[in-house]
Length: 205
Length: 371
Image (tube, rainbow over all chains, first blue to last red):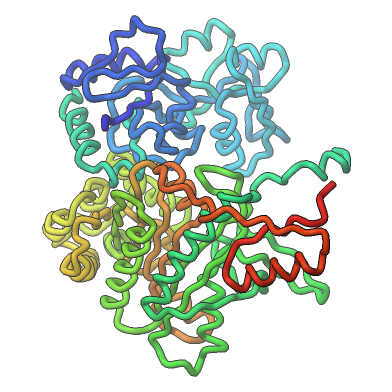
């Protein structure tokens, strides 16, 4: 039986494809719209980036590739044996540029985010009261429209923030792509999993 | 929410089992309990609730359903069995010489959202070996765990063994505690070597301990990992002696013919406020999470006034049932169809049914008709 790998078609796809090529592992050519693709002795599942850890935690996929940002938000119990060294970004707190908003000065921090759990923990952890407005996207417009005082979001270059009139005030966490492995597969399918981890590990820059 | 709606709805976290599902669960329970009996363990049926203090311990108390008794005392529905058995062993069985071998089977409730084959109401079957020589007790419990999984037909199961003394030994004298300890433990448990390195930044450690802690994330695999670990941890006597203890137990279980069922995972560092030695989890291909596990907890019984070393093991019936349903084992329907007994004379028909029952026949009494 082949190993199943969960991937997202989002921003980590290109880095993942390059890594698999370098490692000499099979990878789907991306022409098909099928969400389950067998290639060589691997089976690939294409799912939403936030769902990759869930597929792996439940063992539906033996491994997967997910950003640390997603792992922090989903909080799944999975193994993270490799930092794959691509997809670098930061989870950061941003406010309208030039505003005098400060989380520590607010009676309640109103924060908009796709990362509801990360955002809540970031402020609760330092004893602040927090109200999270959970959004599915376009988070950057929330403060300007009065939906929230600030946002917690993934920042790569900072351009999107700037164009939407926001500035970074705090960093919550650093992120990069990780290989994640199901706990049961790690032991119950030890040889195959170890071979994959090893092959990918040796292909890292 | 209207009352009528509640009458139809099942609260999240609890389940109800019908027919073949219920039968499958009973079969599993019978199989496991007969193995516990076969190793001369004695059943304990502990109370459904007890004083909340009995279940103290950080991991459990946040998940306990507690309530105020009529006399103002704080009570809790049992979130686990081990504390109750420890209390009974130290109390009612205080004059019983060690080792004491006890088992249990029943529901526990934990305030947890349903996730990964776990509900708020969980059915656990487990045993506790209290007192006695540690190495022999550990090996016995692992052997029984293997027999249970074999008896259940869990194909390809693996017992992944660790020892919390490796991790605590490497941290001895570092003064790391609280959130930082938890952050480090969580990274070791995730096998994230770089994350371990980051969590150790700005912490004073004995020379070599930093590298050894990062190594814990890769010291997992077959029994040969123990050789690697002995070398890698030679600089830290406490960690090395934990590996030696683990090796002695693993060797014994291997010599008993279970070598192919054993794996080593020194990154297994759960429940540090509870476990004191061996820890293990049972994995089976086809189920993404463990079906059971256990470990050594030498300090718990002292809380109840009878300091005895102890080791235990538990299988989650819900997960075993899920696994067996997925592995597509033999259907668990009842063996033979029932024989219908009917007649115009109710008393005579009942007499016939009674006679057939006395002969061991399955009977469906056909009189009376339903609405």
